[in-house]
Image 1: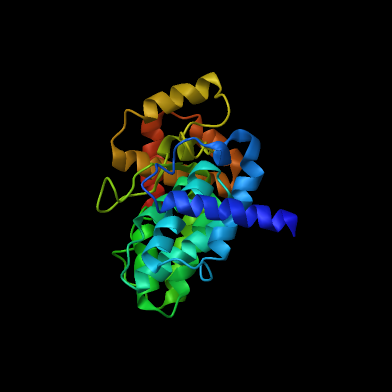
Image 2: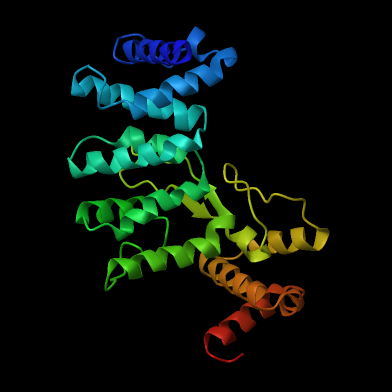
Length: 268
């Protein structure tokens, strides 16, 4: 019981700071490096016990927002992300403010957590689906394309994500800066070379060979349409036949473009 009492005591200290005029993001003894485990446990307790904490609803919402920011954005705690995502959708259904929760969720930069958003595409509540599509607007066509049912919508997302997840870079955009933030973007040069990237920077994770770097430099000079075409075609060919992909990649870029266009036209 002593351990639980300490977690609850620490949690209530956090809550008092969160709802006071004190800058709760400032360094203090509870957030020191020596107390990370205790701090995380206390912050998780706040999220899990939010419905039983005896303070006004407006204050608990503020405490939850700041708790979520610390857990997801500062500590990068993956275990808290399902609750944070669910709270963001719950507030959306109630037409309540959820921008801080959304920012905290994406600031975790956990690419696999995107499925916590995508799963809402299958919801029977139109508000859930609308918010999910909005948050997943980095997927081309997910808001413009008409789908016959929610399963088709989810499959559309899933197919795109499976193809592009290794090449996504977190943009850092948020609702505090833009009305329609795009949270992730595809690093087309990395997709063209079929090399995974670091989410936070978009940098290719391993050192490129000299010929790969030359190709990438030439690729970056192309217009965005041609980059998108080559990146898409390169990925598809790499998945289909790596030997043919290596041969295709060894050709000058103008030939690569010609081959990709011919393939789209049905000449293979």
